[in-house]
Image (cartoon, rainbow, N blue to C red; front, side, top):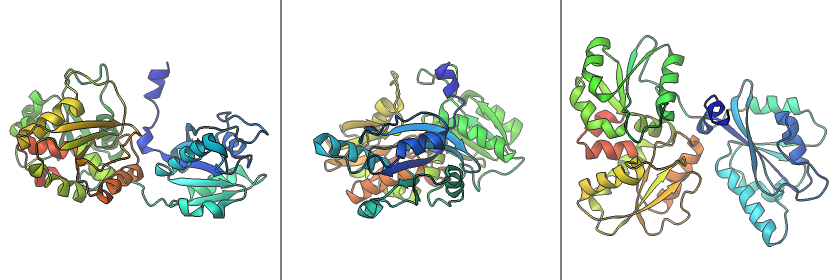
Length: 360
């Protein structure tokens, strides 16, 4: 039931992340339990009871789907305490809103670059929820299909089913695009590449969206007047920065034999025999450069801390990351002077697709 039930949840990357901070014994865990109406955090009078960030998914109306995270006290002591504080502060990389519980905020103010609401014991939890729901968040991503599709339009979604496709379901980007079509009042027509021509003739779609690995095949089969992009590029447009990725493409011809390339994904999954990150991206780079390159891989929250020797970062569309997380990764690469490019854009380039027309 757990795996099936998880399919009903809004993806982590589409949730508002709310994190609770404060000193030890300030009442963070008590507040988190009251806020979520469940016992997700252990409550005790012993200082330092919370040792690692603890998260729970929930909905707050009218804010919508959220992830709530309880953290360890920022005044924790000793070598182990320092590690706990480091983990707590790392939550700020993904949080959209912070709630500071109790006293002591001034010492830590400079760490917080996001909206911070303050709460003291005994205050109304419902009032806190209402205050969070009323916030206007700077990094709220635009809709995936904004400016591309209108009510009544038809969207052709090309979803190859091969050995890397999850059995019995569509991958998350495909699911999210279809759901957004429904929200917009548009029609989603789903097919494999072999049916592209027939579906295009029958439905005259406003837009076609393909899995990046089939870019070249779909472009050949699709009437050129129909706009074509990929699921990965759509998410790169929503979560990242297309201009930064365009600049990253310019670095590909400059790669030299032995250069290190970091291939990064926002999620963790069991890699298949023909995995896009581990197999297809390296093959595409070999085709584009003719060079033997060195590859490192990062997945989930494990985005490398050291980019000193990396010559290029190739990142997935970030469907499992928030916009703030993805922009933070782009910023980190830019600060280190490392170009960054998106999966879909690189695969389009390797398959001879006109990138200017594909980067919607």
